[in-house]
Image 1: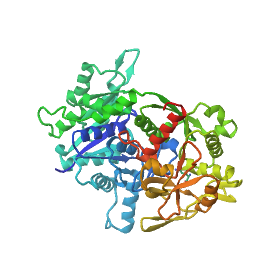
Image 2: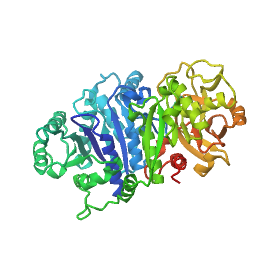
Image 3: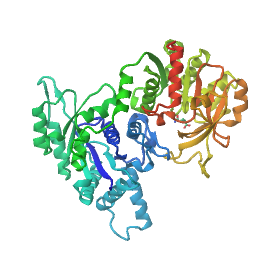
Image 4: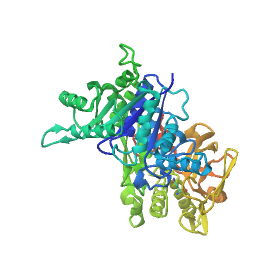
Length: 546
Ligand code: GLN
């Protein structure tokens, strides 16, 4: 059977949770035994989100094959367990650069290059590329219907129905029914308008997923169906839930999967509830009924925008799920510790985490937090920048290298952390220079790491070899390894050629592990990452829960 395409668009307002809705639908279809792949079409002009500030775009999610992608791909992976690839996220910028490169090569043979058909063809090609034996391709269009930027994408997905037919394509539109308290009513007009907007570009949605704060009365459903020209059963309420991991269950109860299958004529009589969502029941049960709680401080620079730490937030929750505890995350702005005593903020914490980050602002505050955790034996987890800061702290305060610093901030006498200009990716050598482009030039994607026997890292992973995802330009300088080890910091994981430090730990500490990669990108609710499970367990030990 050829793959069926489900296109997910959003209307009325942004931040409706379209990404989550797509991910949850993917999970339900999986729970019905189907193979799914999820993709995202992003209408902005950046070639990828790698060069954008986390304030603009939230976290940049990195795939195994080294693509810097939208954070929705993190939802897709966490809900379906299917590893995303470069071919699962595209932007206007990438589409245009490909079309323009072809134009320069002369591939268009003298033709005029236009949005329709050249840009739309490139989008259609992308949507249908790299598909193997999947039953469903769920393809989310970023932005809100009515934006100028999304027009070529909407035109492309409109054409896909013409090419493949109704039997192979389904349009799912996510909208909002605002509650007007003075009237005491949910309003349907914005939904009607947004469907009209879609119709004006030739797309009649097949199913509406209506976000609302309260139950949608039957009369309103009927009204939406009538005005938006969809079947009443295809107006699916999407009410708020207390944990995102309940979304697959909630949508199934409202009949989303049944209507999708009906649309494709794939629903066998009497098989409406033929779905195994037990793994989600189990996760939701653990989230709702923890046996205790721990307080973990996360010291970062982008803490006002939690989307910047989306995967980290989820991974800590997963660590809690693994240990049956609730993890209370205290987000603390790192700059604070540059003039305030960390003890005032960290005294009540069961564990401390310094996540990834860029640039000098807040770095000294992070180093102060590391020092506090190390000296007071509070479990410490450093991720990427958080590892680099941990190594600088140890160099300064354990190994007595007073000028220890990172060349990311300025030229320093003792570059414990330095710019990486050459490294191996498989059999290939990758090179960079000081003045390389910023976009797509970090050490990106999955790289192997050899774990040293007898270390905590080895024990936690239960093996000697792991692959984890990277996204950074700087590296801990292996030339300092011997001096740091002599001072009490163990290098417990290195690239197989021994050149790139991947994990450091302090053996004389209850739990002090810092990694150069981003383990949060591979944690899933039903498969919590071992480092997060172990870290949360260490926090429980600190708070004497075990
Ligand atoms: N700024 C650091 C680097 O580029 C760390 C990046 C990160 O934490 N992702 O190496």
